[in-house]
Amino acid sequence: MFDEKSLKELAAIEAEGPVLSIYLDVDPTQQQNTDRYKLRLREMLKEVADEGNPEDLEAVKRYVDLEYDWSGRGLVIFSRQAEDIWRVYSLAVPVRSGVTVSRKPYISPLVEIDGLYGRYVVSLVDRQGGRFFLFQMGELTDQEGTVGEDIHRTRKGGGSSVVGMRGGAPASGRREAELVQRNLKDTAQALVSFCRKHKPHRLLVAGAEHVLPKFQEVLPNPLTEILVDSFVANMDASDVEIREKSFEILHELADQRHQHVVEAVQTAASKGQNGVLGLDETLSVAYNGRVQVLVVERDYHQPGYRCQGCGYLTTQELDSCVFCGGEFEEIPDAVEAVVTQTVDKGGGVEVVDNEMMPEGACIGALLRY
Ligand SMILES: [Zn+2]
Image 1 (cartoon, rainbow, N blue to C red):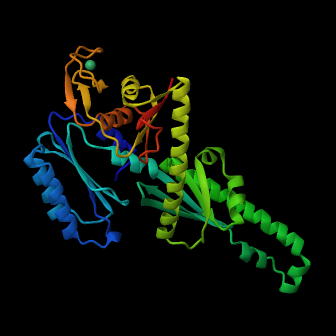
Image 2 (tube, helix red, strand yellow):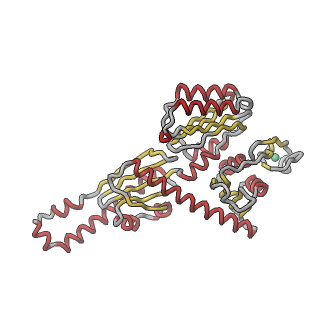
Image 3 (tube, rainbow, N blue to C red):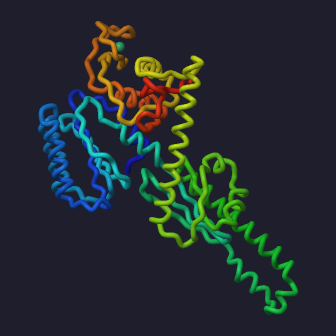
């Protein structure tokens, strides 16, 4: 199971030699058979036949041929057999196929998927109870239900006949409203326990249109802070319906968030306060661990240099590191390196669409201080 802990672990890997990173789109909804995916994999492995270690190429090929169960929609593998590095992740969401050979695992696509889906909870509620769904990287990994008192049975259980009920309508209506309120509160409490156990980053609430605002009213504080949106759904909606609808909403939210963060970087950078634009500036603030949110366009790559002593990244060819006096090595992608460095130092990363950043800058950051 992939989670953000795995992301930090991957970012911290520092190999002595080349790590093979494989992303393979195996989306069954694309109507392609496994032979085509295997063919695509062989083509990718051929592309890196010179740089990659034969042991790693062979290990990946063997895994896909013999062990992989073809579940999920995206397969991600990192391999460096010589140093016992072997990580396989089968994802419930599609990935773009690609191969990279580098000293560190290539994690940008995973960072993007984590930013989009991450770990979130959908709470489907009605007047009686709730169904809670935990999704991690788009995969349903846990669910729970809670059922309160049956509203209809209680109403009838008062001993009144239908005629009698008409007479007592206001009282029983109030009684019903109280019961619904109590059920909603109990459901909210059960949701608190579910979220305490799983620590989601986001919460979506779903249910009948008239129940949603009432439920949001009784949501306690830690949950309102992570509540991002709500949508109308039937209580008996399938897992797949809930997943697809929530994906749709998360995509929209990501678009809004990206626009917002790009504007924030631009404003901060233009004022010279807590924001930078451009690769050189970003590399130097990232080294100091000052990046709060790194913003980078999806297909932006630039070669650069990395200090072998302290990890300082730069696009300039320098004789020795200004920080530690160490020697530089040329790296194929300083952009990927700064994404990894930011994740490693605990900063956030938003991978945005190409050309979304202001002209001339395909990368930037909001700073902590
Ligand atoms: Zn250095």
